[in-house]
Image 1 (cartoon, helix red, strand yellow):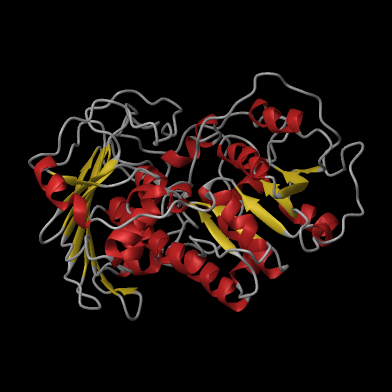
Image 2 (cartoon, helix red, strand yellow; image 1 turned 120 degrees about the vertical axis):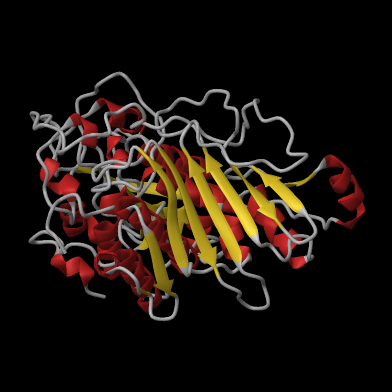
Length: 480
């Protein structure tokens, strides 16, 4: 496989949370004044001693979400850009928590004080942090998608299985909300059955929309911000010259670092169908449309077809993914209007959510019923309305969620619950996205053997399942 830095792909998540003020911070790699270095591990009833790796943007949102549960004790924060404005909201709220820029130095200095970690960093950096944490015996909450390559996800699943006493959770937050419990109840009751096709759509504008697609090289070198540890930011991937269009959420635009619209929103749209319809891995993935296709950043619009074979008495099922502002899917009769914003759907990665012709969501086609759904925790409805009225008396009671996604993780660390998106469930879902991104990058159809987990019709694509070798000094994370 070529060593060209374009031959990669990766994944993850971004959201908006910013504070303008820039507070002074302690010397890096040293503890903040007033912090304790004598924490002991949690006893029954105590809070979970949590290290947060990535505390800006989505990582910062995760910090506040963990704090609201009342079950977390923050013992250390780590971020490669600890002095930047986007981390200040967290640092001002929790001024006495020790701070590091390099997660390896954090574990070396404070590993015996950490019980669990949250990982809210760019997609390409999930893998090494997660593998080191599991190897050190720490519970792990990692943002979606799990990792940048199919093989990295595979290794993360193997590590979680090896350390079966540890709790894992992927950060697709809707997997602990109403849609999860409704989909489970409706499937068990036979309301959702014989599904043969699913449409998933995310048509909000993305960061890269409007960029010139005739690009011939990566962006020009710029000065590295004084607060940024650019070397550690790369993790396992080959080092790039710094450019602002790689940092602060912009990483999502590039095959080298992020997973585009599919990796960002796929886990919020098809997660429940993937789990409760037991879809597993696809047998074929095709890029049907790639408007503005290039080797560097994601298309302006993509249509991707995933084919899943018959399994456990269920019929074969196709998922068709649509992204791009003008790449709207066909809508079934009785779909209804969709101009109003769904309050259950967070803003896209550019932080702006405006009225769309179509909210992010999904359409599920069963033999007898068709379902319309949104994203994250949004529940399904049966369409058209007349059919929904006919089914009212047959619908099962849907239990309320006992805990949100963050509380579910922490309570599981305490032994009181089981996580709803552990690696054994979230891993195959993340691998679906890995295959989809490979199809986007190669602009082709991939045939996949679900038993051997190999691509059978494209040698380069099969090599891409593993990806390029990690950069020197990062090889150890690939050993389970």
